[in-house]
Image (tube, rainbow, N blue to C red):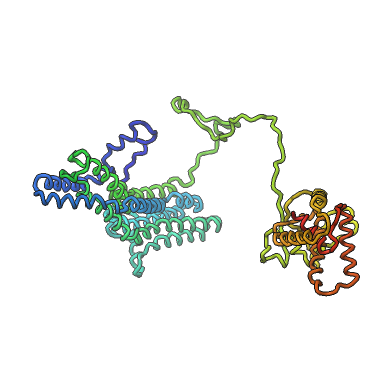
Length: 560
């Protein structure tokens, strides 16, 4: 049976939940009182024996045992084990309840799609419902003790009216060593097919829907057999029960009050009050798992399987036969002229305050004339992707312009150079491929050039001494090592051209350091530096005369 107490806890009151503690059926008192009584009897027997019967030497030995058990009793992880076990059992209990099988949905759909008031149509609808209840009764007979007591054999199903004698003969004629739960479902499918052939079912679509509904009902019912066949592993159940009962067996000694010199400074209540409370909680916890482990049994909180069978048969036949085709006539409702109907309440229910679904910020006060502005957002920066960049060390990272474009000259026209228009670097082998570079925004081209001019004018050394040139070379080497930290925008075209040209010039000088360069190449390099100094309007007292040193100096100023 099932103990229902939902009405008692309909509202949370001071004494509402306390009244539940006075219940007996399905309560913790009914579950644990035999074991608690047995445990207390043993505890008091040991206490009396220790206090009044044992000799002095026996008391010392008994005290040693009690201290040992009390010290190491916490080694048993009883709370951890009980928590996981009860959680697993409760989940299983809920899934069993959801798969009990209810006839309502198949019956409603069956009464809708199998049309006709003829005796043939009526027989088809009623027999399909009876076959669905039959398969449920056959399953419950094998997994529920109370249903097995009601229908010990298949003949009892015939006597009860769920099955006919002819159907039992057909059932027994099927020779197989397996349980024949599928037989009533097959009969229901064949009857539904007959209804389709006779035109009692309008279309194949609703015919397939009905087959699916019956199939789902069968899956739900047969899932119960799987839970009965494969329960929670026995070793898990044994470990948890052994842990709980061993813990309280040890507590019979460990919770004894010692009267000798080794006693703890506590009150001798003679009755182990705290141990009794612990017994109630832990043993009640394990009893919850024991009750939920098989909800198809005969405990107080087990499912009403016999009632479910009776209810499904009665409701199913009522839907497909008594209520078939019965629908009230169409008429206007009392809210016909109202666009926003309001239902009435009783005086008691109307006085109860309501909290309709309104946004939590609906009542917040905000200024109506607040300005709407565009927020500042970080811009999406794309990274260079190409054959050399994909999969390499520079993939998806900022990279130095000099390193990547060492051998790739940007396409720059004279007009673009003069007007400082945007210039897009292009691969030599793929001119149509556009390229953008991640950059640290340090300002526009004018700002960067002004900064270089100021640094050049302020930091220019006096005289072309060897030591000054040596410092320029050291600074250039340092900036080259940190070149991966420097990135340039596509919009900074003058600086971009400057860096590319300077890097290109440095590489050519290093490659031809031991060779005599041609006259025209040397002339181009000299003209490049002269034009660069002229365009930047660099003024200093004694600029470096060597092209290589000038290049070092420019790199040093730019990266400083």
